[in-house]
Every structure is written in C-alpha cells, then in structure tokens.
Image (tube, rainbow over all chains, first blue to last red; front, side, top):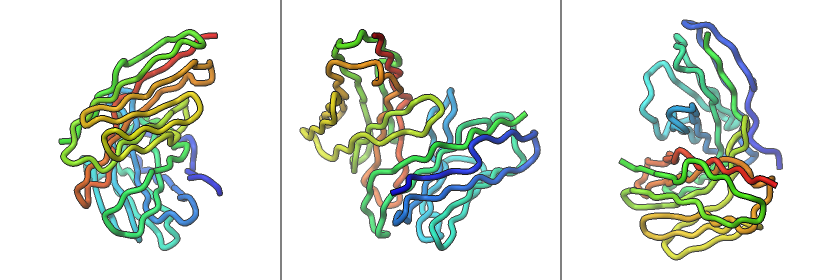
Amino acid sequence: KAGVTQTPRYLIKTRGQQVTLSCSPISGHRSVSWYQQTPGQGLQFLFEYFSETQRNKGNFPGRFSGRQFSNSRSEMNVSTLELGDSALYLCASSWSSGGAEFYEQYFGPGTRLTVT
Amino acid sequence: EDQVTQSPEALRLQEGESSSLNCSYTVSGLRGLFWYRQDPGKGPEFLFTLYSAGEEKEKERLKATLTKKESFLHITAPKPEDSATYLCAVQARYTGRRALTFGSGTRLQVQP
C-alpha cells in the first residue's frame, strides 16, 4: 500500500507571498492532520480534517488554513508568508470512522518551505 | 495542557551498547502514547503505540514500555543504522483533542 505523499518536496518563497501544499493520504484513510516542524519549536499541530471538515485546530494564526477534498486529499495554505514560516510541513493520515477513537498517524516525507 | 519531555536530548552509543530513552508526559487522560523514529530530512516513521500502564511492545532491537507517568524506549545491542531522532507523542482522551503532542526528541548516534 502506498504511503502518504506530499508535493512539492521543496519550496522557496519570498516574504509576503502565499503558498499551497498538497497531501495525499494512505488509501482508505479519511483523517488528515498537518504539523509544522522547526528546530526551535519541534513538531507542532496545525489542524486535522475528516470528511472535508476541520475537526481540530492548533494555535496558529489565521494565515494558516487548510481544506480536504471528497477523495480525502488535503491542501494547506499559508498566506502573507513570514520568515518564521520556514519549516518542514508534515502531513499525517490516520484511519478513522468518525467517532472518538484514535489510530496511529502515518507521516509523509514533508515539504521543506524556505521563506526569504 | 498536555506536555511531553524527552531525555536525554542527545545520546551517543557504541555499537552493541544498550541504553534507554525516557519520555515523561502529563496529559488529562491518556488515550495513547506513540513512538516515532525520524531520519534527517524525512517524516517520522511510526514505531509503537502504547495504551495503558504496564504495556510493552517490541520490534527488533527496540522495546517500549509504559507507566502512568513515563515511557521508556529500550535499545538492545544497537547498530549504526539505529541512528536517528526518536520522538515520543501523546494523545489525550477527550473527544476533539485528536492532535498529537510531541516531545522534542532524542538524537541517537550509534558509532561502529
């Protein structure tokens, strides 16, 4: 079974621009979560989507947004990029039936975003 | 607020020298504790899930254990290919709090 895929793998943007990152979950997984990883803050939760609905959101400004499509693929968008947004953005998928249960999250390789 | 603290920050071992990594956690009702391995420039790779105190899981040279306040990842006779950052994460029991809270990781280097 194919793993989580993320595109693009590397991205260089200029301050003030916006960026869209894409994630395709493992086949059959309906939950997709996004994380930001930086050397200083480690792995931090951005948001989680299930059946095209955001179920949970971390403590990030509104410049960070996301969505999920009917095929469970997800995108996240960062508007008005700042230098501090430079990070590895990781997508993780998990099997979920929509209830309160939780299963392991499987991560993709990440998108390395550099803001100059 | 959920918190995860990992120690040591970095660990250097000789090949074959066994050791343990520590993960201390504070969470309002633990649903699960997760161990991941992360190689440079890659996403975390899932290793184990532990759900209740006393539970143990093994995979090759790795063994994870869980108490009510901490988890240990024991590495027996490590090899250079075990070099990586090992991350611990917890998930709270409350509905809606599905996010994983991660520790800062332990960077393990195994020298031949």
